[in-house]
Image 1 (cartoon, rainbow, N blue to C red):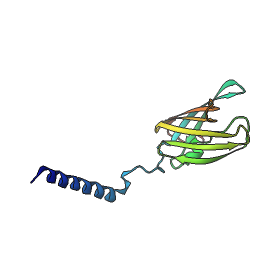
Image 2: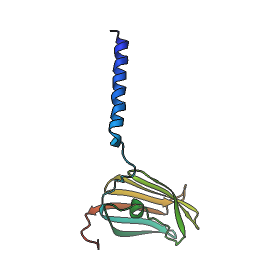
Image 3: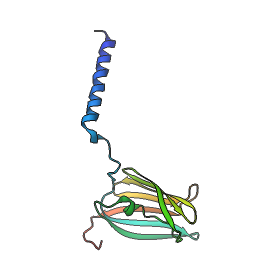
Image 4: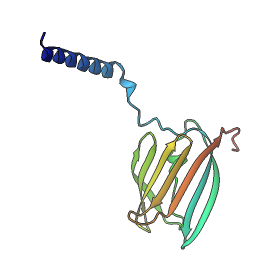
Amino acid sequence: MPVAYQLARLARAALTVLLLSSVLTPHAHADAGDFQAMPGLWKIVTHSSAKGAPHETVAWHCVDEDADPWASFASLAPTDGASCARSDEHRSRTSLDWSLRCTAPATLHGRVAFDSPEHYSATLGAEGTEPLLRVEGKRYAACTSPKD
């Protein structure tokens, strides 16, 4: 048999295996709805610059296993009391991106990005400017009671 013929047969066989594996294992690709944050007790450190002065706040937050990632991790809002509505939401396994339309200072962009299931960084700010908020979240433990 000529080498070209054998290579063509091998290529067809490989393509057939590839096609069958994608049909027979439909869950081989990651589901964007399967958000990769671990449930538990999270320490949230928020850095802001209210009226030019740097400010840091620390909060502890318990995230349940079936919690909505938007409510648990993307509840960032300007600290100046502006009225805002979230839109243009995009979600992947490890990040949340959105726009925030506010009465002032106009349209903001938010992003939460997980570098592991137990740590994330987030920002909220107008495009092309320094973020209004920088947030770091780190999971510390399992939640042990409703008061966590």
